[in-house]
Length: 334
Image (cartoon, rainbow, N blue to C red; front, side, top):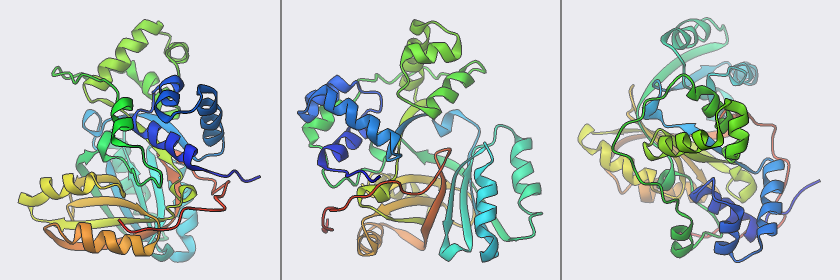
């Protein structure tokens, strides 16, 4: 059974993008609907796989993550991608470049786990033709750096009303081994209550609340929104591999990270030095983004690889679309 996604649904998703832990009561006030409406629609969107909130460790607070491009024999692409998706240390897997390439993201817990994948398992897979690994030096994540290409965007006033009052801490917070249970629970559902998190960690509710707020204030924890963008009328995704002069990296990276179409931007090592994930309404929209936004910046080289299918997203296996929008908004220029 398909579910129609309307303007209210899209605005609820955008609101959760601003603050994934905002109470339903606050969302209802800002959106001008009842609290029951927000709660009911959010549960439906969550159950149907349209969206969910994830609490994630910021890249700077963990072991370096890696993005890997694997060229494979086309007939083996699906099976290799599926094998990668089953690994707990691999969080994103996509089929790209006409089905002959797999792009994946991994955040190994140790050098041994990293080497097992990059130096042992993948190179010895007979279907693998070529492998390039990029270590992430700096990632733009959370807040203004999330994908926000909504057809029914919130107003600036609504965004301001929903923006969480998290006072940044000048004291760095190191992740402790006992935080693993907390992060594990939040990575499954970033909207778990403090009582539910207390049940998982064995801590008191007050301790959980203090720890979550401390990690968030220190920038070690952020809340991301996992969205099935194609169900919101944006079915075209692409990976951009950019070559930028070192002196321009910060400016180009920051500029592209703040564009509504970009969901992930990172400075990486390797033959290119900037990776950008883009989601658009159609190929014409992608063309305008490449020629307009990217073309206006001091980018030396660009390779575009379109995503055919997401196999795993933010740690979750993708089962394919389960709902449709029978009357999507018409495409329009920006």
